[in-house]
Amino acid sequence: MAAPLDDFITAAAAALELPLQPAWIPAVKANLEVSLRLANLVAEFELPDAAEPAPIYRA
Amino acid sequence: MADSWSSSSDIAKAVAAGQVSATDVTEAALARIGKLNPALNAFTAVTAARARAQAKKVDAADKSKLPLAGVPFAVKNLFDVEGIPTVAGSKINRAHKPAQKDSPLIARLEAAGAVLVGALNMGEYAYDFTGENVHDGPSRNPHDLTRMSGGSSGGSGSAVGGGLVPLALGSDTNGSIRVPSSLCGIFGLKPTYGRLSRANSFPFVASLDHLGPFARAVRDLALSYDVMQGFDAEDAACVDRGIEPTLPSLDKGISGLRIVTAGGYFKKGASAEALSALDAVAKALGAATEIEIPEAARARAAAYVITTTEGAALHLGRLRQQAGDFDPAVRDRLIAGAMVPATLVVKAQNFRRWYRDRVLDLFKDCDAVLAPATPVTAPKLGQVTFTLDGVELPVRANMGIYTQPISFIGLPVVAVPVPLKPLPLAVQIICAPWREDIALRIACALEQMGVCAAPRPNL
Image (tube, rainbow over all chains, first blue to last red):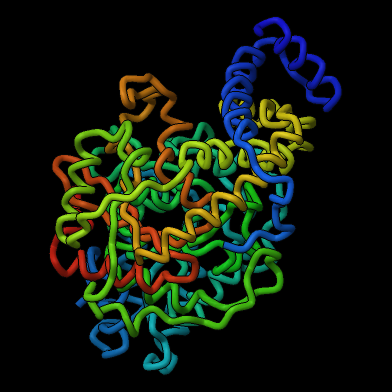
């Protein structure tokens, strides 16, 4: 997992035109790992196809 | 009479009765800020000339029509204050032009007689739970200057908890009102999503941003909240709903209210202090039933994902042009947020609808749910990690584990401080949408029972 995520970060920074300095990469990677882990925790939860977000959310 | 620990309602009464002038109250607040701010670092700007001018206006007005006559207040520095740049805790925004007009919440408080005395320190761009700021230095906890005030509205917690002002405004995206309330031992209200206008404030996460007040007395939350209500088309999320005053029912007590405690996720990882605070509040309210809020961990995860991606989208241009001017910790989180695939963000928003419906079902059988506001009391300044449930985790991202699943669906919450020794910790009173009145009523009952109070620090 380590090397592909490094490659992804480099490619995503280029695609997004973000001036990523080599010294920032370990912290960016650590944050991205947490975000992807949490995002996948949500994504693996099965929802019906009809479950849509609201354009403007109402509590 | 009014002193530095007086409540807003007592100050307003004293000013209205002619026992003290708004000018005298304002001068006393400015003097106290001058004396204590060097230690607390709560204020980033003091608007002394403006405050004196407003106090003079209040002194000349019919004060019977001003429910906040002469009450000094301050705002987190992401609120627009006419004439000064809205820095939002950043270095980058210092180059912005001065704000053209005040936030409508400031305008509404001043129309009620309150006196703005300054702008308050905060974590950079509100992406923070510590109250630390690399540009301005940390705002400090009034109960222990070596400890965190909590973020991101750290200056608000520090200023109210330290007795510099009786009232402050802050923002809460994931817990930024409730976390400083807990760490600094004061009351905080995060209203329903869409209730108070966010116009003319610097945003963070449009899906989750809320604004609200801090105070040392529940009545002050109700008083300020009632005058800040009202539709504002300038905020796309603001709901066109009539003003629903909370003051008339504040003293009704808890009779007839069904109050329960959140178990499971909301107890896992809680320190002995957090459990003790929760227990004290639950016992006082007779909240013997424990419920499970379904999928709270996933809700927190979804809030985290929406926050990091919407925050990244907001700051994308600045990350491209001025990455070196950010707080490095904020910059690295935002860059990572920019790289999260959009499919996963949509999933998080879809989950939000599902989760909201499940949680609203719970309110068919109860009127309020109790949960700790923070897992621990105030950590030391500079502390990077803490241990929750045997796992070492970053403080900055995890102080809000109990607040995030609640603001995620915009429920109203009053954070009530339990004056534990040596450091306080707050409990959340969580209600159904638009039922701020119930949360405030319960908070008021706890205050009257002496279970919850803002402890006075030795400063």
